Image 1: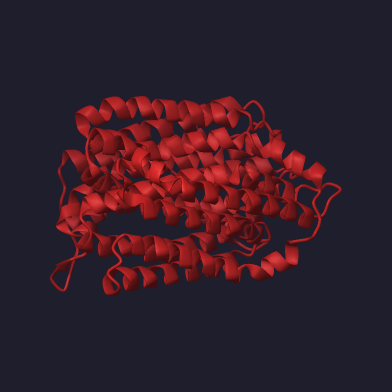
Image 2: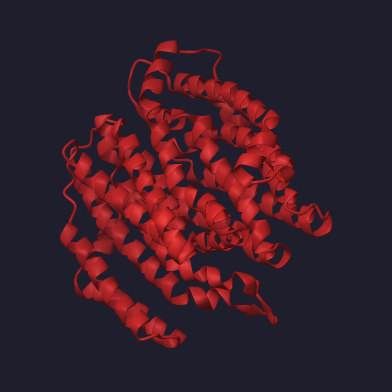
Length: 479
């Protein structure tokens, strides 16, 4: 068990480190944008990229999730057959979808952005979607074969080119916000070129129709669930545009990006977690391993949450050579960061509960889980935005992710019960609540006192044997 947890920890560290490097490099563009674009312009960019994230669900229609399952499933077909069926299908439909978006760009711009002035952005988004679809399955193949370093290297190359071209196109070529989209297309093209060896190795001139049907049956239920998840994640931006304005969308999106520190942990963990638990389907000790991992995961999440909450204002107001890292016009976006961090925390819990769904193959529950959370999110946004603006939108997101995590746990535990140590989890968040009460009620602003609170919380975790050194040593010791 210890070796399993150590392996997951190592993979998470590699993915997480790579994700930190790539996302932090990309994160540096936010200060760059804040000094060149008004929040209303950044709001337009955020809405288009929100649309791209939503359309990714349509472009993949659950085949990416099915690929993860069937690529590792030991049946009477070769892994290359699963790869080829998935890639050829996504290639064909990706071209079709992008053509539709390209020629429907005028209508899409008017309906979703409130103006036909953004047709060129919609057309560029169609190109980004197609390129992202082509690299998706080869990247998943690297993950499933434990090629974390290669996966991270390709993503790092993507972001380095993306950042370089962003600066070149916007600062030196005066391309405005269009430069952001051209840079993304170029970066995705580089990723595709670097993944050609994976395509050559796995792509075969065969099409297993029976396997493809099984993959569709498994994957299609993820589509409504994925759409609902995107509604949950993105509808707040569009409702803010309609109910408030583009400037608020820009500030809200900036605050969301400041929650990257928690997102890095969740995403790095998710990249390692899915291949890990899928390869443990026949392991009799899997449930006990999953339970211990859940406790460690929550302790780490709580520490990241507290650190970012305590020091986010110092970060966003930091001055380098007399120039603020972020334009002052964006400083108020820090107000929503703790709420967004909490939302990501519950998203991480949801990710931990996925084995019960995958192993039972009851993927039909996913649309119900995501759909109910999305519906709740829309209702909460409608009422909370009217009264509290972007703060209300953030709380709507938090409460919706809380609902999704709770619903998932109670709905799927009967199919594949995992004996989580809820006593330790409650101690983790009970102690966190006490520290947060001291911080907010005491109106603490001194960085040294904040550091003291963080160290106090860390010490309490060890005192209550949540993060004792023996457990840490056991996780990382060699067999």
